[in-house]
Image (cartoon, rainbow, N blue to C red; front, side, top):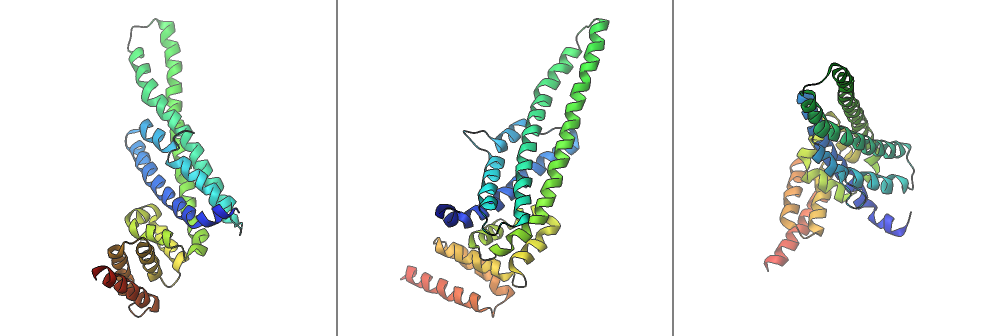
Length: 255
């Protein structure tokens, strides 16, 4: 692992987790749309995939996964599976994007042309061509099912992989700051995520988040995060220590 990657590793881990949560949220919204009326937005899929010159969310997630898992000095098997799975999601999304384009742009044109007066032989041919339109929708369903399945397995694998990043304050800060998003993405795996990271001391998430805010100069936010930890474990020495540091900083600023 290069010194630069090693120095950036805590950020890469946080970014990977953030990108995963954001991707799940955006993709699931599209999948629900498909469940309801058989459509997904090509524009949204194009945006989250991106291109070589302007990488989208899924592309950045894939690249970040490579940084995290392929430079892992511990070389966990779970990490290798996650690297594969996240790459698979990216490539399935590309296929879904192309199918969405076909359905969004070519299917309406086909239906419009099919309304024209056609000779019997032409009608027979267009009926055969219509099967391609149906197959496109079937392909989209398979792609969505595969992405959903792999995302679900990632939600199960990630908590165990992240176990040794229990001191990553950037990760803790994201989970705290975007807790609604994290909960909605991990669903029934949320408790497992927190348990794997912080074991029987869940207040540590708030303490670490508070430290991260404090180091960035966000003292008010640091105090709010620490208050959650204090409510859970008021006698925790780290809570008391962090509170003392924040109070001292606040006094210096006020003076």
